[in-house]
Amino acid sequence: MKKDLLSTEDFEPPSPSDGLGASKVAKNSESPLQVKTQKENAKVIPIQKVSSVPRFKSGPRSSAFRKQFFPQVSTAEWNSWQWQLKHRIRDTESLSRFLVLSEDEKLALGRDDHPLPLAITPYYASLIDRENPSQSIRRTVVPVTGEYFTSPGEAEDPLGEDHDSPVPGLVHRYPDRVLFLVTDFCSSYCRYCTRSRIVGGGKGTPVNANQWQKAIDYIERTPAIRDVLLSGGDPLTLSDEVLEWLISRVRKISHVELIRIGTKVPVVLPQRVTPALVRMLRKYHPVWVSIHFTHPDELTPETNQACERLADGGIPLGSQTVLLSGINDNVETMKRLYHGLLKVRVKPYYLYQCDPILGSSHFRTPVEKGLEIIRGLRGFTTGYAVPHYVIDAPGGGGKIPLLPEYFIGRSGDDLLIRNYEGKVFVYPDPAGSGGLEGPVEEGCQEAGAGR
Image (cartoon, rainbow, N blue to C red; front, side):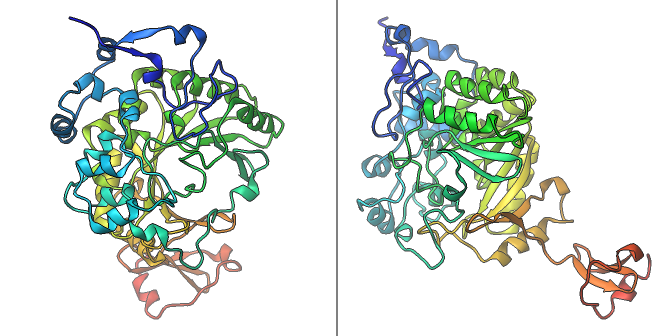
């Protein structure tokens, strides 16, 4: 039987240029960039070799989707993360093949001034409801006209990251840690993306080795930095070779104790979490991974397997979830998500109030909604399932935690506190009588009589 041949460039993910043995960067960074040595340029890989990769489980939903819309594609190809990247859904014509588009979606897709490009991996598209434009997952990745309306208080860079950037691609806001934006490419684009000003479509500074080196040099000459968060874009869209080049150089800096990776890849491109990737990451411990989860429907067999592979590699996992109106803004949805995460060893870490980027008002909830969710979790389920609810303060103020009113006030030498059921209790705290102040609630002494 004749073998189909694919060159290595058919499988290469986006990668930086100007070094690392890389070729020149394509002008449009939305197009996958190639990292190839001269030797690799001449090499071809039989497509059958894809099947030699350890078997990756396919869930029933993605399997049915593949058979319906990609009947000629083998299971091995479908489970190749490079194939998934190459076949992302990026235009209206392609999207309309899989979804019955609403009039609002058609209007949004028909505009030329897109604030953020459309990109959805075929795997993630398999989770989208074909008929229902209100489905939670669909709303997070399919454009609507609400993106084109700017409300008061919204800004292109609401967190003031550019202001705290000592060198391109690096944000140094907190004393002992930096945010290293290593790429402006994502496999799928969330419509509420905080960095929509720089990701996709070549709008950001093209990532290259020279820019990376400037960031690494800054970290090296700043001994207060002990924690480096690799983000973007999405670092896990880089090849193993290039990602290791970067991580190894950061790890060589003596005062860097912790390397973190911020990613949504295990959710939208779980096939990327290969045994080879995990083996590479393990060499540079301690490495932590923060995964962007939105909804319990994302907890598929594929995503669960990706998380389990990382956890089995000794990599601590945390989740970061953005609170979104009509998508995940209720206690039961969050409880299902967080319980599911714990089962695959992912600790719910942050629940973010949606950042006021341009055109985000249709996603943002009142802050009270977030407090309501925390009240509905705290005490009603394990503390491991309760994240920090935070606002990333506009203007560069950093993350500010918000909590329901558990502290009531003082009564003499006693501290008055409220539990998850709303009952008030008294804690003896004479040494703190000069500190915390607050109103005394009528009836609180009786509530705490059993102390």
